[in-house]
Length: 348
Image (tube, rainbow, N blue to C red):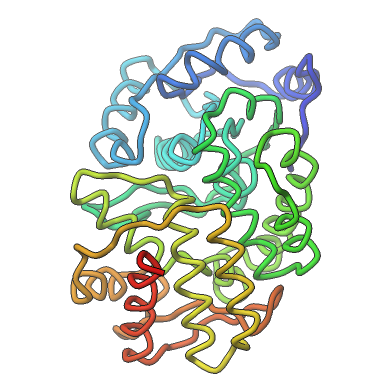
């Protein structure tokens, strides 16, 4: 269940009072510790003891070493199966915290309180938890729903612009795969800020939630949520491996451009629709320089994508604005042409 919190967090307090927990562990990074934890603690009403677990911010922390440290801390603090983990943060925190909670003692309860636009509209919803393995995104994880998701939109006021723009990419993606009206509403936003984005968050969350409810374990339609992520994750992974991490939404934006163009090359999407998508994504996102990435390095990552079967690269692509297809095996020549197309945008 997704609940929009009021200013005194009464819905969260009601949840804590109605359930029997032994102890609370609040997972944060240094950013949410500083900007969001005081708001949570100032409004949280409970007689239970709680501990703050802090990790460094950044995708590079989403690994087995950090997970192991958190498992050890939970063990040292004698967390039992009645403990509750509150994940207060962005996508890294909700992915990591959900994974740690869902595996510790074969699973303890957790809730997500997302603090970034990316986690509100996407990462915290759907029950996917996970960590990165080497430089492969989300290769180890579980499908485990949080007990609840509590959204406090005012947390967005604590974000730098780049983080806000990063989350907006997932909102655009939701419109492209499932709701043309949502897409059109978003692309008419001239200035990205909390005031212009907040009215559209609920629609974006609903799209994600609706897809997940139809296909929790990603056997069919949930795969459409991976549009822009096959190439996007490859770019994100290569940047991470070179010690130059980028925000997830920046990679998704590049992925939207590439995979819209690939949809056109594959005969799924009209040239006009592809042009509209590419131009509107470019309106919000700067070009990512992938000139140093070789095609074979990108292909090596594409071949390790979780959606693949029998060493064949499966894409989720578009057949129209608001219409998506999944399990599409693209022509290798078209993938190479797409990467070349993206590289040339830097000189356009």
